[in-house]
Image 1 (cartoon, one colour):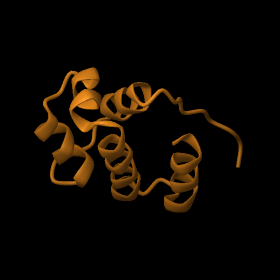
Image 2 (spheres, rainbow, N blue to C red):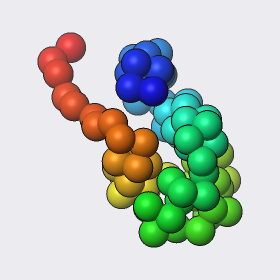
Image 3 (cartoon, rainbow, N blue to C red):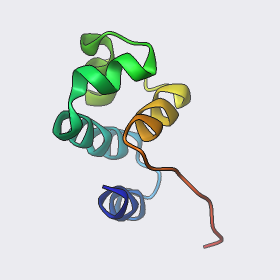
Image 4 (spheres, rainbow, N blue to C red):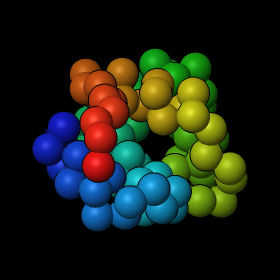
Length: 77
């Protein structure tokens, strides 16, 4: 999962919809109900944030990443 997300972050280079879709796919594969609960959201709200029909919040991104058991890190370009 970490390698997939890292590749998508590099490929989409900050493109919010692309990154959100990658997080949605990983959440669905990992059990979206469980991931949403870990984020403090209901499944439908989280799905809307990750599919682009609602604004994506950074706390949701961090919650999804944490629920998936991975972490984000920053490195120089």
